[in-house]
Amino acid sequence: MAQDQSQLPIGVFDSGLGGLTVLRHLRERFPHEDFVYLGDTARIPYGSKSPRTIQKYLAQNLAFLNRLPVKAVVVACNSGSTQAHTVKSDVPLYDVIGPGALCASLTTKSKRIGVVATRATVLSECYPNEIHKLKPEIQVFQQACPLLVPLVEEGWDDDPITNLVVYRYLSPLLASNIDTLILGCTHYPILKKAFNKALGGRVQTVDSAEAIGDQIERDFQLHKLPAKHDGRTGTFKLYTTDVSDTFEALARRILAPLPCASIELAEV
Amino acid sequence: MAQDQSQLPIGVFDSGLGGLTVLRHLRERFPHEDFVYLGDTARIPYGSKSPRTIQKYLAQNLAFLNRLPVKAVVVACNSGSTQAHTVKSDVPLYDVIGPGALCASLTTKSKRIGVVATRATVLSECYPNEIHKLKPEIQVFQQACPLLVPLVEEGWDDDPITNLVVYRYLSPLLASNIDTLILGCTHYPILKKAFNKALGGRVQTVDSAEAIGDQIERDFQLHKLPAKHDGRTGTFKLYTTDVSDTFEALARRILAPLPCASIELAEV
Image 1 (spheres, rainbow over the protein chains, first blue to last red):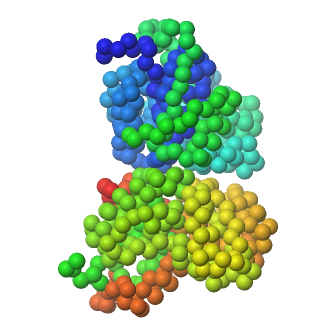
Image 2 (cartoon, rainbow over the protein chains, first blue to last red; image 1 turned 180 degrees about the vertical axis):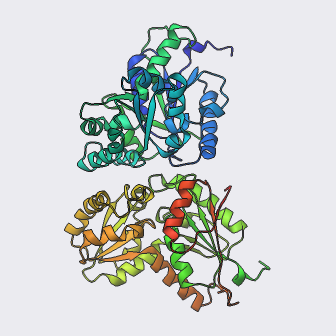
Image 3 (cartoon, rainbow over the protein chains, first blue to last red; image 1 turned 90 degrees about the horizontal axis):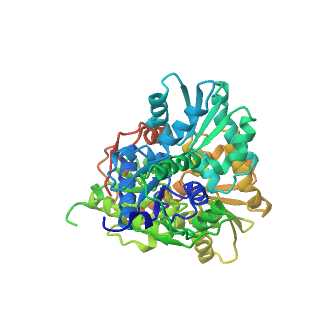
């Protein structure tokens, strides 16, 4: 590419709007970088769908980001990340699985890690596989939590019903004496209050946004990824494959207190 | 068409597997008819998406059924039905809105009808519009219930958490003194137990499957739709746009005690 790569934005992709939790963190951490966000709201959720279908959607969405173009793509979606290895990319591709697995394996003392995620992520076994590559002796306990994304989308993130649902999902993990819990879906940090209530201070949580921020920071330092150095505050642009008032309201809620740019429609 | 139309199957379409509640009813009611079911599981749910996106998906799915071919199409999906008027069809197209609205307006005595449905169906105002065409004096109270489809898909259909969620959604409708409730999503009949608990016998429910069965029966009698008369027991075939063990298990659960045919993948 002839263009100065450092000036290009970083693309952030999610199946919907949960990845905005990652975008928010990356913007705070790298305030001079430009970002472009793409949410596949026309086909959300990915977490209940098959690997074949997720692969197809991921490839189409990454092609859209590469055409913009971007200097790197962050797959800020765990269900999407499970298929990131199947997609060709001209630019560095960051998925959330590796950084989350690394962070959790450095955090656990009891060598017992829990993973909460969508059904697709759990069935892919990506977290146990990544963790066992790093430390084969760690035991990993997984729990699929299909209701948590809909609860966030309904806006019931601080709600007794949500507390009950989270408590039910976490009970078998707590009974397994985990000391570290991977929030294996970018929607889940929005439910941190409910998680903290159910975990009662006994368990450390690992959140994708911070883990992937650490990895990008390392790559900036190692010059694997060219940082923008013009001192100007970065911008961000929001695309989704379906647009509605409900999506705009949810985007605004996740990004608050940051203002939410108007959303543009992407044909992927 | 040169082919004897009466011998063709009836196509039943839904965004996912909830429409199997309609298929099950139609098979019981018209045991000599053949049926083909198509569930758009690769893009489920429709209920949170925009009219434009639902239109596009509906047109693609109906084109698939027409290519098979079929002698009629039942849009056994309320969110899809809200856009049925935008789609061209060579064969009779039945949507669930009209029959449900008719049945409810004949049922209510207090002239106060409640509607529970997805957000797309509620925002389309299709039920109030249809009911007011029939009887302008009826008052219609709507409630979007985005969590009910995920609760069915999680298999929590007979569960205290589901009872709480249903009760919360129904409370404002009950406070409005409705005497009739339209279950405006084909997943909801699976939650009939929870609805009955919350309604406490005070309210009649109207279910899409029966309402659409009545309309098809009338059209058979009026020869608007040619019935199959060879005395042979009808068959049914199941297509979905995404295939997984989870979908197969849910299909089996909804169709029980009927056996579930193996699911074929449809490229729409």
